[in-house]
Amino acid sequence: MKAESDATPALLAQLSSLVDCQRAEGYACITARREHGASSVDIPQPQLAILLQGRKQARTAQQSLEFGPGDLFLITRRSRIDVVNIPDPHSGLYLSAIVPLCPEVLAAARALWTDALPDAGPALARLPLAAHGAALLQWRQALQHGQYTEARLALAALVLAFCRRGHGSLLLAPEPGLGDRIRDLVAAQPERDWQSRDFESQLGISGATLRRRLASEHLSIRELLVDARLAHAMQLLYTTRLPLKTVAARAGYRSLASFSKRFAARYGLEPAAIGNS
Image 1 (spheres, rainbow, N blue to C red):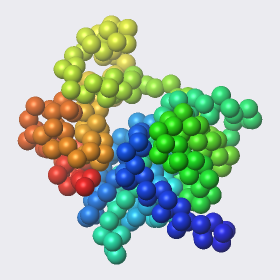
Image 2: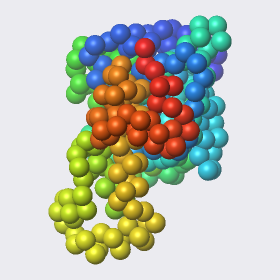
Image 3: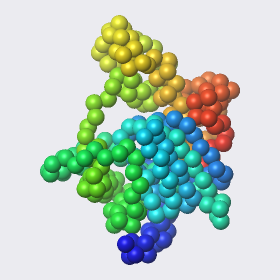
Image 4: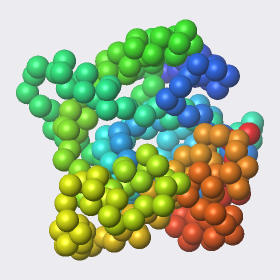
């Protein structure tokens, strides 16, 4: 245990170099110079956050966890969470690397797993960084050399290690509900002027069936459009330095004022409060 603790500062220093890695595609470094939080953030797929500086609080209806440097924040399945990011009091900086566990990585892990399925485990988990340092450093090295196949293999090895710790949800290929399928369609083209007939065509169902199935999930097309577009905007705000007007346009909003109003109503904070500089 002490060896892991001693290795953590060196691991954090090595992984922090990803911030300036131009080839580190498929992950996001989030920075903040003041505390901020967001409510009901939709996390559409499993992902891993590496806490580098500062602290994070995360909560669902079932769980409440806090993370600091040396912790890994694992989300094992699609979730909606409340989060607060708190800068380090000495440096004044919050910094984390968000690593999406993409479908290719999860499919590779499922193909490699030959044992009985472990327990599903909780949706959120706090894991020690040092226990997974070797695989994370392989992932970082592969990214820095633009070796994306090797990077995915390193992540697949991480997924297998997480499953050994009882997080079997990662090995399950969930059947998405109709609402999730619509959110994913909109997320791929958030600026498109989506109409009901577009979803009927894409999903191969009639308008009556679409409305009936959404009603059974207590959802509406309008609500799903807003969810997907604002989630896309949240991602852009955290992972780019685009002007707010550009973020709004890419999320499908012609009016910056309308976008800001909906974003604040949805997440409980103004989009201008998020920065990645």
